[in-house]
Length: 372
Ligand SMILES: NC(=O)c1ccc[n+]([C@@H]2O[C@H](COP(=O)([O-])OP(=O)(O)OC[C@H]3O[C@@H](n4cnc5c(N)ncnc54)[C@H](O)[C@@H]3O)[C@@H](O)[C@H]2O)c1
Image (cartoon, rainbow, N blue to C red; front, side):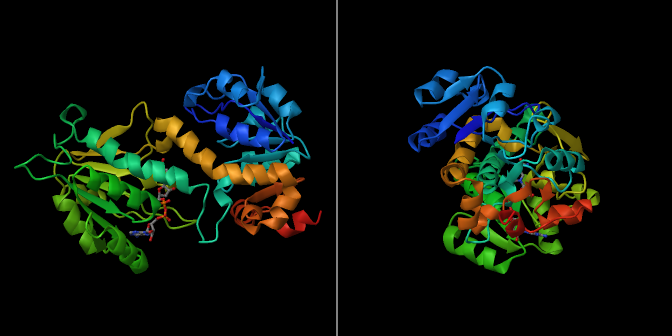
């Protein structure tokens, strides 16, 4: 199969859909890989790295879209990219169609077969192509929170780990899923005094079993949250209620109970944020202050560490990309119900119920698309 990877054109996006290692694997499987010149630069991969891996370099995005039977990307296609898609072509990338009627209309119009990273599932009921970005954001959260706490950024001037004779900072993590667990591990590793709250008792049991010596757990009742934030130097918001906006777990009034210069890191900001005073910020201007409490609310945290994020995403997408290329999308999806769950559109038909319901559009089952 001819696999194409254009340079990402969404502002501030430095990741790339195919790493040189992934290109090499595809070439070993007998496929042809076409990379737009400069596509890997933001993640530290030169054209020469791709050539060494056996890929070919294309001079433009047009050339990639024109030649490729399958396009592998990171972000949802932008309008100019959507205009280049065609029936019979496979698009494998993040799509997030439910809140995006314009993109959905364009993808349906194109007739392309669109497989969304974010709806591919796994045997454990997880989302294997979202998890790597949650791992990145979770591990990054204490790092950016520690920086926020520095005096020059308006923070309390507290070192997470303390020093001998000085107590460590207190970190409260609300939500003990993928983001929360990785955040708690890193904060504990930096020497902080960490408590993780969740509303799922099975999750709290798991965390206690596995990490009982590294951090404490608490049930995420409103009362426990209210008590813990009074003492906290940093609060990391990491909750997710699938398919819903994040619940607001700290109100504006509660900020006055917190220490001046303490830091809120709202990782759940991409779902609306879990603190009442959160609004999305950018890497250029990540922090703002409300009632003396600093807020870090960057909606695309993995972008700050594009190279790590590209490598992590590439590891997760590779087996699916190879299956799609080796077997063709139809056979690959027929053989793997988890990959089929990623199918969002095919030949002008919407194939993902939640997107159809969210946008009020007709949809067919992915199984029906396989039979087309
Ligand atoms: N800002 C970014 O760049 C970025 C990057 C990756 C993920 N995220 C976001 O981070 C959030 C967490 O993602 P995840 O992968 O860890 O999800 P996850 O499903 O693995 O974990 C979410 C956890 O929240 C818990 N929870 C739900 N409601 C709760 C409540 N009221 N109180 C306490 N806990 C509650 C759940 O029990 C679960 O354990 C999501 O909103 C995700 O979109 C943001």
